[in-house]
Image (tube, rainbow, N blue to C red; front, side, top):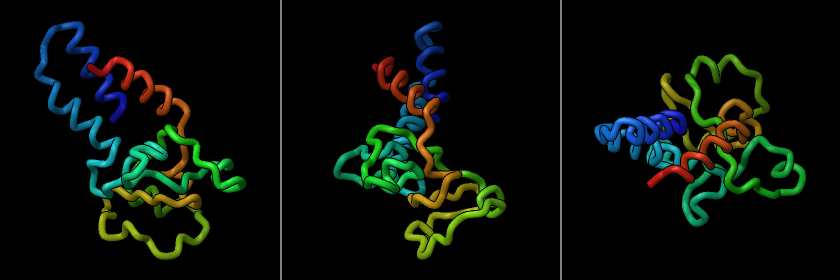
Length: 132
């Protein structure tokens, strides 16, 4: 979603064509919580909203410290999720939103959907810098 929104901005700047503006905004909004899970995939953002809060990150696990601003991987297909070996999740508070098309867990144990990603975080910083 970060790449999609960024590409739309760059396309608009290069061509002057503004037809991508609506889906650019939808991609940005998906990242920040306008998605089936209602969760922002940016750790700690928004501060008082539903956001990734239990990332697969050692700062969180060992010191209960959130790497605020980090972007987590986000949802994966159910078959990918089911093929991975995880610690037991316990109750899935997002179960009603899970589907074959996308699974996301805001849990430390889920390294496939809730691990902060450096390249995605850097790309998000760039996106927010060039957004008008």
